Structures are given as structure tokens and as C-alpha cells.
Length: 353
Image (cartoon, rainbow, N blue to C red; front, side, top):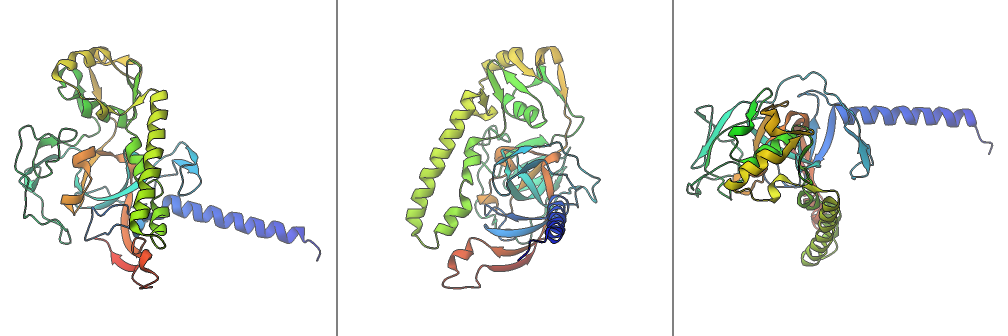
């Protein structure tokens, strides 16, 4: 059979166009996400495969190019197009997890930039008004953690999820007066999230946490292994592989001088040392005096509040990591392990509200 070069080139051109169209749609309009936790039960279940609307909060051009569903690639410049609507309190939102942007989290927005929030005996107060409880939430206000002394927001929460003293969600234009700071861990975290090079001595701070990166290492692989192997054996293999992976990441960070702000405890007597030695973009903060925040931030919580790893523990989400909102869940990848006994159990159609 004679090779038809013209036909081959035409088919190659069509394939290239299809790939470009598919990539453009994925990058700007809709994308599929897999939910890694049960923090939004019963509205969204762990393992749900969601179709997300990416243009509602402003389409964002790709920030990274590489092998899909892997960490092999590199960052690229990006921009965000005008938004259809802003993120509002009560919106179920898809965003990049600040401590590992490769993980996509789905939570409910509790506070937008500038909101004043407190939590008292399980009641969420936003700008002086009590928040209504989501109708499909799994959280049952039967047991409430008693108030503790110094119930500060992350990083001093110490497990008290139902009582947090009043705080303000950071917003663009907010001023941080360094001479008045008495809690440095969250301030260093915010400075780093805001896109700055933050250093102190031989330490450079990063919000990318090796422990969080390791949480999803091999997630789908081990779920599929559960179809053919006992859960105890799968858990053993998963734990060993993830421990080795995280140890390697921590070792790499240390060799590069990278540390997370929450890795060390700051005592009151350390405040003066930090004030004298902390640098932002090559300038000592004692010479800067203050800093103006450049991004708007959001505070998110899961509907399954007793089992939700959310902003109460790891802080705020900057506007540049907001991706969109889920429209519908189609199948559940966790339930796919029952395909041999119940072939249709993994099918799921739920419009997210």
C-alpha cells in the first residue's frame, strides 16, 4: 500500500486542532476534578468525579505545562480574564490547596476578603450575622468543643474547631504594621502566599508542605489495588511508599534551605529577633515598616465540619488560586472498587448546590 503523505499531513493537522481545542476547553471552560476527602459530605462524597465551571470566577490561562495528572512539568506566566461573578459567601468553590497546588479542594466559602468572622460554640458569625447551616451538611451540632483560652485562628487552633476568636480575612490594600505583630507564623505565611521572597538568615520560607504533597501520592493507584488486594495489605504498601516519598521531599527542601513557616514555634521573646532579621524581597522589615497586601483572600470550610481539614487549620486561599465551582458529580472512584459485585454502584449524578 502506497504511503499517502498528503492524507497523513491532513489527518495530523486535524488531530492537532482537536488537541488544541480540548486543551483550551480544559484550561478555560470546564475541567474534571476528583474529590480527595469527605469534608463536603453529604453534598459531595470522597472520590466523586466533578465537572467544574472554570469561567464563572474569571477564566485563568494555564499556569503550568506538563504531563496531565502528574507533577512532571514547569510553571508558565498566566493571566485571569474578567469574571462573570465574584466568589460569594455560601458558594461551593474549587480551588488549589495552598500547601500543594496540585491538589484541588472543594469547600464552601465562609468568608470573603475583608469579612470579620468568629466561631462561638459552633455558630459562625460573619460581619455580626449568624450564618445559616447548609441544608445537606453532615455536621450535627450535638457535641461542641468547649471554649479554650486564646482560641486563635490557625496556626494556634490546636484542634478546637467550634470556637475561634474574631479575625479579619485579608484583603487587597490591607496594611500590616510590622512593629505591631505579635503572631509571626501566620504573618510570614501570608507574606509568602502574597508572592514574596521571604527569608530569615539561611531560611527561605515556602507554603508548599511536603507532608501535604505526600498525602495524595499514588491515591488512584492504591484505590485500584483495593479491587484485587485486601485493604490491610494495600494500606501497608501505601503507608510505606508515602513515608519514603515525604522523607525524600523533606531532604530536598533542607538541602535547598526551604522551610514552612509553621515548622518552628515562635515564643514571645523571639519577636524582637524576627523583627530584626526577617527580610521580604531582599529588604529588612524593620526598614520597610509596613506591608500592603496585594491579593484578596478567602476563608473556606467543609459542610462535614467535624471531619473537614479546611481554613481553620491551614489558613486563607488567595484569589489567584480560585478555579471555579462544581456543577455536577457523575461517578465515584472510591465505589468503583465494588464494580465486580455491583457494576452500577459507582455511577452517581448529583447537581451541586
